[in-house]
Length: 303
Ligand code: A3P
Image (cartoon, rainbow, N blue to C red; front, side):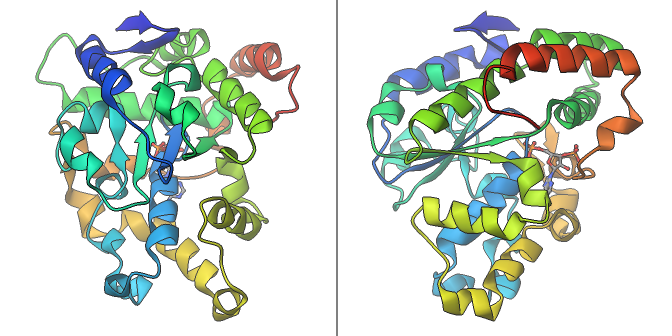
């Protein structure tokens, strides 16, 4: 890995990131999903895609004809720096990207400061999804263990030991880390630019007020739910369609693969809040709390 502009990335993809930074031109109507890996990107992709496309007659009824039933969410909301600028199908090429109908639904893992200038200066909307660092770490550790097993043909790769990986996580040394700086930067930007950046927490979408957060999301991207839709149960239908239990049982997500090295089933593990309690020792809890206090302490942000 290399450290570039205060974040880490695999050496092999740095050139794609540079292309993205240099050539991507945001459009005012773009909707851009920003996240740290394992904070709920796949879930938010499915929710956003469904909210924005719910009036498309070809997708009706949602629970029978939604493209989500036959496509992995990552095939419907495109991954900019690695998918599009890395030339990985089914993401469109940078040229094709220019001709997609608006609003374009796009995703990035880069920190706010490293985003192309046009993302900051255009009127595009950004939704940042964040998740508590405890569950994010556990999810990331499982992900890397599986990913590296998929790469197992290379004897150099070993699944990381949890204690080593934890050290790297706290130091921010993993692809698109550090986590804490990424989250707080988007949080602060969302406070300063509330019309441009919506900061969502994974836990909020899981909690008792999930419907309120989904309504806020739909309003933010310019596709609010009408009273009629609410009374007809459209919000519940969307939540069910995009729920992990529904998505993980679909054939496309059970057996599909992406970019040759990723089995799509690995995007759907437990999808719970609090799984970290099965893994953390008291000293791990203490260390994360200390790092969290250092970074989030001065801001009104908690998990
Ligand atoms: P766990 O490993 O804790 O289960 P990302 O999409 O950013 O890679 O994040 C992956 C995490 O989100 C995994 O968490 C995964 O199980 C969870 N996830 C995937 N789809 C989900 C959904 N529809 N609802 C809730 N969680 C989901």
